[in-house]
Amino acid sequence: MSIRFTRAAIPSACAGFLLALSACGGGGGGGGGGGFPPVGQVGGAGPGANPPSVPVPVTVSGKVMVLGPVSGALVCVDRNRNGACDEGEPAAAKTGEDGAYSFGYTPADEAAAAELAAAPLLAQVDGGNPSLPAFTKPFTLSAPAGHRAQVNPLTTLLQAGVAAGLAPGRAEALVLQQLGLPEAAQLYDYQGVAVTDPGRLEDNAFTAALVTADALHSGVVLRVVDAATVTPVASDQLARLDFTRPDHYTARTYPTDGVPDPATGKLKLTDRRAGLTNGAPTAHDTLYSSLQLGANGWVRCDENAAFTSTLGTPSRSDYCGGATRTLGHTAVTDISGRKMAEVVAEMQAADGNSIFGVLPAVAFANPNATFPAGSQLRYRRGVDLAQPYSINLANSADKTRFATLEALMAAFPAAGVSLPAGTGTTSLGLLDDQQTRILRVAFTGAGTVQYYACNFYPTTSTYDTCAATETGTVKMHTEGGARVLVFNGGHPPTGVGSLRTFGEYGGAVHVVRGTKSDARYNLNAARRLNGVAWEAMKPQLGIGSAA
Image (cartoon, rainbow, N blue to C red; front, top):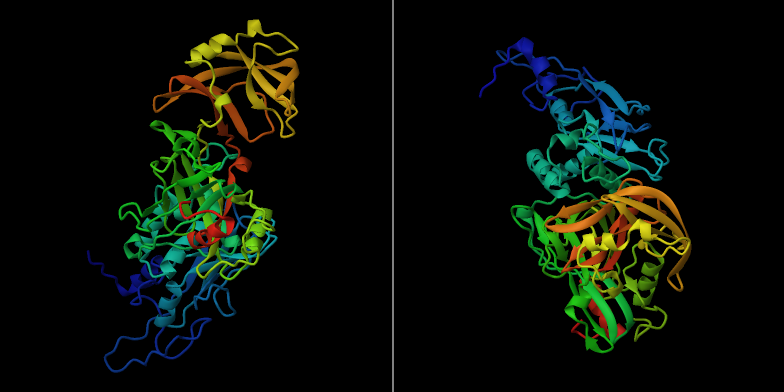
């Protein structure tokens, strides 16, 4: 399709395209006409040449957003693309409570017009910003050229891709893939995305923006990676080590061949576990004792369950066949040459520790052993996007004597409860973090229950002094053919992060647990050694190569 502009139509057409075409707007020879010096002088008009065009004023307006409007942000056109608002670059007054900015400029000539139109927009956010109380350090948001109506964390990720050389359309597609978002429009304005529960970290653009903003605030470099350009590099990381002694330990690693799926852009990882129990190899089903409930029913979270991660930063991970979904960002620190004992001690003193049972002062054969070249510490921080039900097959006490949920409910009728002893009830777990109170339940009829609160003694796992509290409702939830009881209406509030219920698996009723959906219970952090560091540390702990 061809478009023909009349001379009178040129100024408005160019404003609409943000002066992205060098054939539009701009000044003629000589100087003047704006607040910026020309990038290069354009020669005067000769005989028969077109007269110089009139500089076209440009207006930039929009809002700075994270989860809501960001006040006190300095917005500018980053003409020299150095990631900072410098003197002489077009800029607005700091944003107010509505996050709005508006400013104008008039390019000196065609070259300046094209340069400014192709430059990204920046929003510098000071630390201690009252509109972002959780963000104590300054950070910078950006938006790619041609999209100046909103500056937010997702436009910042887009701009990182464009700055790395990706075409804008390709950067959009990769960011959507990377974050698991449905449409490009949400990258530029997600304020209209439906939120079911503001107290949850839902799997949507708001949560993606929050995680991206946290990466920026933490100083983590954003990355958008095209799978078509990746050179595969195999790698590994120590996800968790439970260590008692060299002949009694469990190690969990996440190796990958580094080859992304060309269609999804995802890396395939494996949850690999190995260990010894009193010198004998630990059985497979003991190592992989956890089940999670997904779309296809109960899945054993072992080395055969699908486990993927998107490329770039932030990245999305789907674990145990997709039952667990997380979004987070990773910072990598070089620990080459550092003492193993010191690094492990630092990990154990910080959030997200993954090494348990190792006493740094005495565990290493050589107390001064250091990590070799290529050793890294990976710190990942993010959020859980799903709260799957789980069964721990390693805990034999969690397997009840009942074959069906109907049999369980029939065994605990409220009419048979004896108070204050609480006999005739079944447990729904702790009521408080102090482990002094426990919640129990009995069934009053079809779909209804009576709750009881009792004193609890954790050292003996006994309870007494029970009293009836709220009444509520219960229903059967079926997912992938598997049935779980859901205690919903009237459930008393608890001060712990997990919920306890019951589900059917393998011909028996088991205790089932799930994390509450509240945001505070779905933040995660992990500090992990990479494969090079782990392989070097194993002999220092007396662990053989078979681990």
